[in-house]
Length: 92
Image 1 (tube, rainbow, N blue to C red):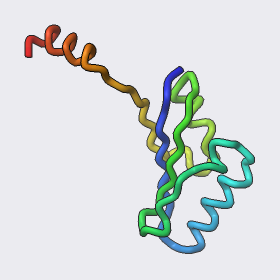
Image 2 (image 1 turned 120 degrees about the vertical axis):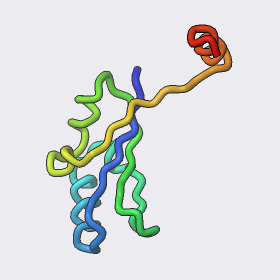
Image 3 (image 1 turned 60 degrees about the vertical axis):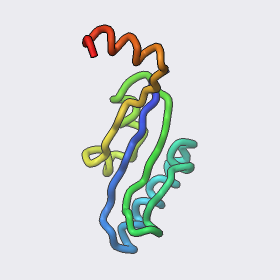
Image 4 (image 1 turned 90 degrees about the horizontal axis):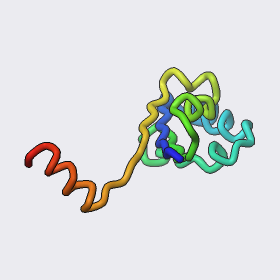
């Protein structure tokens, strides 16, 4: 199943941090109640890692108010065999 990293920014005020965190916690979603936050280090974003079938499903996990600004990246891993095949294919 595809894995996605979702990054959700919010404004850097205490009020916005509280609003964002409470919004995630109120959903009751395991994904959102276990989000990682950068606020205490001055980076006002949340990160969520999840496995769902599509990018749209990943976006729908996020509360609607944050969906437009959320960055969603499908993650993958590489093996040495993958790199050998890529080198051969691209004649590197």
